[in-house]
Length: 322
Image (cartoon, rainbow, N blue to C red; front, side, top):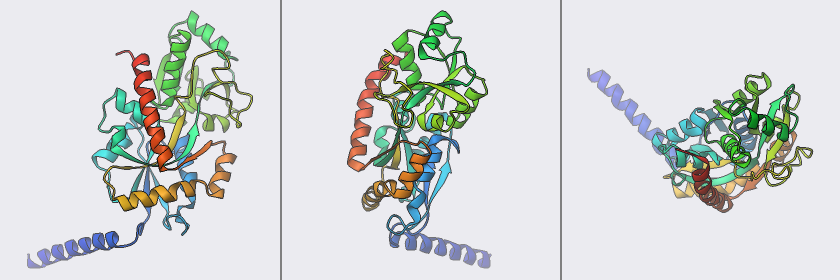
């Protein structure tokens, strides 16, 4: 028994020493985890891997960033976990998605709110696009809307969860046209795309970046933004076509911490992250993959958080009927 107690005491001492040495070492002294709230292969996961690619370079973090996928419930699984159980030592960065994070907190009342997180930096802004299978009879938004008006609820349309940007774009399309669609939330963007090009649903809203990489399997009818995008210059905006759908569903992506991380670490990551996002290899890989890069520093990201919250609080009252 004495031997067992001695071994337990030694183990506790070594564990404590490890924690002390990690805390005393310059940050970061070990690899950093990046929590991604969606499935591997989707736009958020794909872009997170590119955005964090140079992390091990000494001019950035000097340590790799390791992606940890926690998909489910339109992002809520990961963000609830982050607030309820996530470490606050700076070694767990959270990948946010706007408007998803704010919309979920407004509609579903999860464990988190926007105030649960410390904005650090933004790497991208990915508009939602309306997509249909390659062999779909819908060649234009007008044809889509006319059929929906004649057949209420018969068009199945999907996206990467409930109250993500894709769902918000769907609600805006219904409101702008007076049509009724049957929205199907998928586990993530990858599953949503597979359902569209395999004809399991008639249409979908998904990310411009994923659509750009899948044009052989689908047709893109319109973009939910205030202007056309250089990656898809021939795709009109809904506003051009006469439909009152703005850029609220554009998917902003970036880094945040759960509140409670030491301020000196918050400051350091907030300084390094936008510099890393502007690294030539990140810029090149994002462009090659059709992933819209939109780098913002901490102050700009904080402002975006506040603007999105104000806009969504008004919009969701109009769109969501309880």
